[in-house]
Each structure stands twice: as structure tokens, then as C-alpha cells.
Length: 126
Image 1 (tube, rainbow, N blue to C red):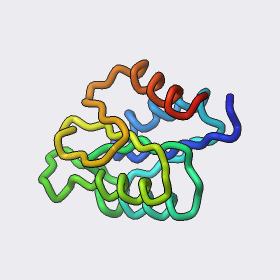
Image 2 (cartoon, rainbow, N blue to C red):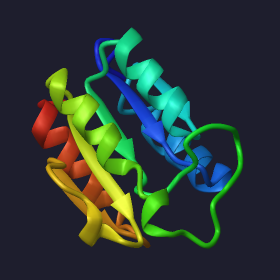
Image 3 (spheres, helix red, strand yellow):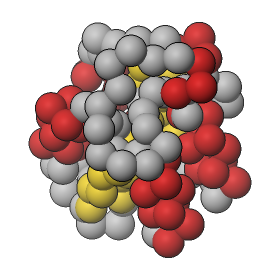
Image 4 (cartoon, rainbow, N blue to C red):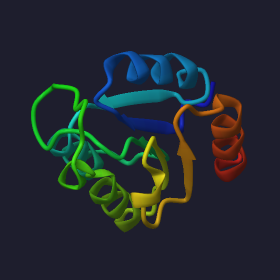
């Protein structure tokens, strides 16, 4: 485990978010989670993350899962922009990857977790 690296997971689906947290806790020293845009942007401003994995569609506030999304629900780019302003590696994971802009990598759900892990390890030299 590398205690110097930290990860933020932005995902409204608690099952998928928890799975990502379990998978990546052995790669990163610290893993935080956010289920909405407000919490994600707050954490990005407060902490110095090495990497952010973000969904594309999630609520602006609150802790609920969006099941039928409209284009207005695609908030992943706001997370990407905040991460890029702080030089953080950012990965988009979504069933609608075409809406992502400026992520370092984009993976379509369902994802191959090995590909995501390999990209992160190579990009962060861990």
C-alpha cells in the first residue's frame, strides 16, 4: 500500500461506489467517497488527491441515485474541471462516456477493473 497516494470516488450508486472503494483501498493509502457534486467539489478543494474516479451522472446535492438521467444530470465534467485545476489525474466512468470532456481516461460501464487499475498505476507510477 502507498500511504502517499489518495483517491476520491464520485459515484451515486452505493453498491458500485463501495465495490470501487474495496478494490482501490489496496492501491491508495486513503480513499474518500462522494455521492453528489456539492460534496465532491468540497472535498477537491479541501484535500490534495492523487486521482479522482468520477461517474458522469449524479445528483447536485443529497444522497440519492439517479436512475433516469437527463443531460442536466451529467455533472462529471464539473468534477473533471475542478480536478484539472488542481493537476489531479481524473478518470471518467460512465454508461454515457461520450459526454465526458478532458478526462485523462474514460471507461464505459461495465468496466474492466484491471484496465482501470493498470492505467492508474502506470500514470501515478505506483
